[in-house]
Length: 404
Image (cartoon, rainbow, N blue to C red; front, side, top):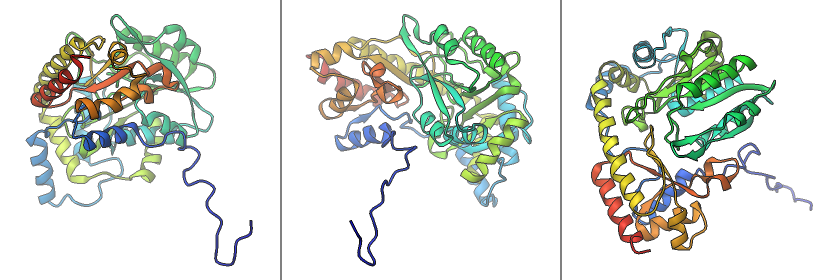
């Protein structure tokens, strides 16, 4: 077909090929359904209550004191010093705030900057699935190749197969991407599991990218340990975290990457062209929380322990099957008995049915697997909500499901 003067051919594709497999994030779709049906939103993982006054006051004071221009590329000195202190106290990681810490726009940007700054096209990265959805998109941006290791439900929660993990490593492995405490399974990697991963990293000269945003949200007898503290790993590990989960300030988007200088150089190379810097006064607010907000975290963990029990007991009563999550703030449950009674076929059907018929929104985890069939029998509920929100969700679920 010929085009007349002044006319142009239509674009061949509006979306770049690297993003075409991903579409709209499942969080946006489920939140839209929740809003349409005025459902209690237990899908997206954000609290429905505000973060601590300590941080907000420090951020406001910073604004009033004139801290309103660009922060330095690595982050404000006061926040990098606070992160170094936090890492030492919480994770036993000693780090240089000037040479080894980079402040980012949430942990999501830290993930992207790490992958873009440290991976080359064709590099292979081992990813445990189910995974946080940005992992695959960031790997696609870096033209890296994911090699998936599937975590499967056991009597004691979700765990990976050691044999499958060993098989995933090769001479092409550049990195292994770890998330502990894990979203969405709630698993906390044991010291034995971390040791196995560390040994394979050393053997194959691979780096570890460790997403530890839920580092403080652990329950019962479980405890978090960073893989960076294992022998041979400090010099080959990037530790990623943020203030959003520990202090219920997801909208502030203040995260960070801790890595040895050689790896930090790559992260900062990418960070400077992604965001360069993030909100200066909010960095001051987070610094105050990291320095003096320990009691806030203890109160938060106590609250989440309570909401986890409330929601978990109700879900089990209604036919969902799961092991209590060891960390994070999600319950990943097998819905087979429930969907069978409802005449539904999988997680997506259930999560589209729930907002309309039960007034509750959840997430279909098949979106977090390379093969969606591996997650089709599961559903994810977030318990990072007020007690009254969880109570209302339970009331609605019981009304919709008790007689099915």
